Length: 146
Image 1: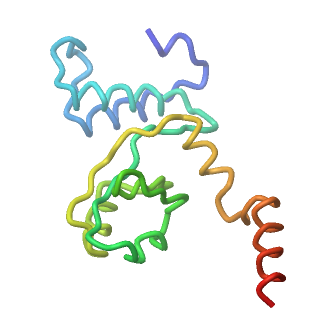
Image 2: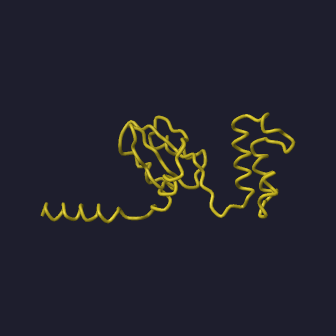
Image 3: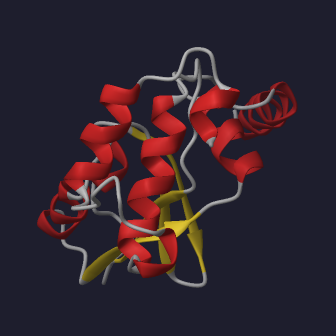
């Protein structure tokens, strides 16, 4: 059904990704596990040959201390501490990212959902300086300290 809606449909890509999740072309969606359904959804999204694809699962980690260095891992766009947990928005990372967080001292790490606005803002603001108003306030505070 999706194939007819997208002229750039890539059947080989669809079958490859769906096959990675052990989903056969003749299987019915209602017969699939939750993970297999997620695989089919990913296959459908990728087979459309999108110019931009934003996935909504990123990482949350519990660290016993504040400074871990995990914020400098490759692919980290943004880290935010919420209720004692560190929420990482990352780019192009696979399941091994959780292992890297644990190597940095995380007691545990798991993938969590992130809303589209937050993901897009983290991507667009990566490698940018603080907002201008924060820079002015910091400069003003430094002048007063001198």
